Amino acid sequence: MHAYDFTVAVPHTKGSLATLAEELGREKINIEGLCAVEENGSVIFHLLTADKSGTSLAITKVGYKVIRTTEVIVERVENSPGMLGKVTRRLADAGINLTTVYLATDTRLVLGCENLSALETAWKDLTVVASR
Image (cartoon, rainbow, N blue to C red; front, side, top):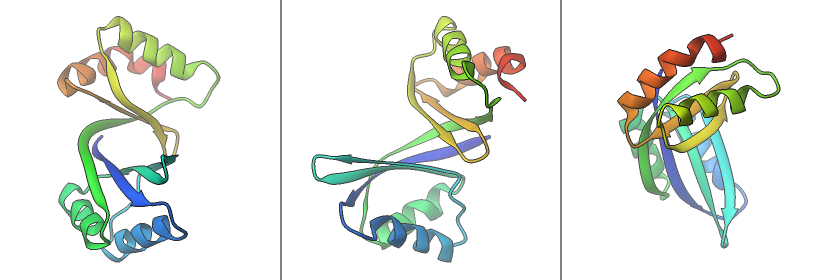
């Protein structure tokens, strides 16, 4: 599945995630994955959705700043010890330099790199290893 990872700068205040999540809900945009990290007094969200334009509008509407939008692939992986190592080793051996990696809902791995088509080709070669 193709989706979009939005890197978003938000205020480090109570309710900043709630504000964004509520707006996405009003716009009927499903959050497929999320990561939030505090950094130097602000918070950086990595927000995963399938709706690029709607998500961009929702983020802007609540006054937050999109730092970067990256097209990524989202693939189901087996939830077992060592699986991430197997998958990322095979991708590295195929010459893929990942720039975005995190887990999304339902044990799905979010992967991004500078050459998405090369990543998709490498992923097809290892689906037997990573698929449930």
